[in-house]
Length: 156
Image 1 (tube, rainbow, N blue to C red):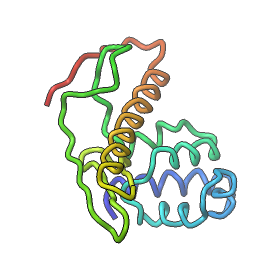
Image 2: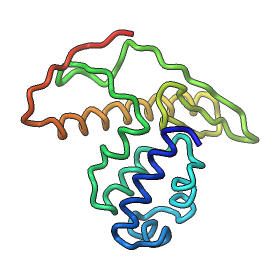
Image 3: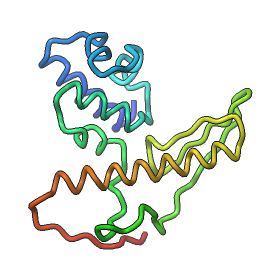
Image 4: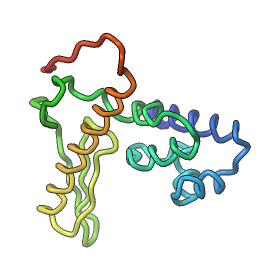
C-alpha cells in the first residue's frame, strides 16, 4: 500500500469509527458502492476519484480538502481569475482494455478516464484534469479565505 492510499485509508477509517458506522453505512450515507469504501480502506485504490472523496467527506462531516489534498498535488499557483490551465506538463498514459481505452495522468492522481475511443479518452482526460485543478483551487481559496496568502505562477 503506498503512502497516499494508507493516508486515505486512515482518515476514512478514523472518521467512520467516530460515527460508529459500518463500511456499508458510510457507503449508503455517501451514495457510493460499499465495495468502494472497502477498497479505499484496504488501500486498494491508488487513484481515487476526487468526486468520490468529496462524497465521503460530506457524509463524514469533514472538509473535503482533508481527503482530496492527500491524492492531488497542490494545484499550480495562478493568480485569482486565471484560466484553469498550466504550463507544467502532465504525462497522459492510455491503455487499451478490451473495447475500452483507459487513460490517467501520472503526475495527478485521481485524473483518469475510460472511453470507447482513444480520442474520446483524450478529451475526457483533459476535462478530468481541468476539473481536478479547478476543484483544488476552489478548496484552497475557501480554506485560506481571510488569511494572508501569496498566489503566483509556478514553473517546474
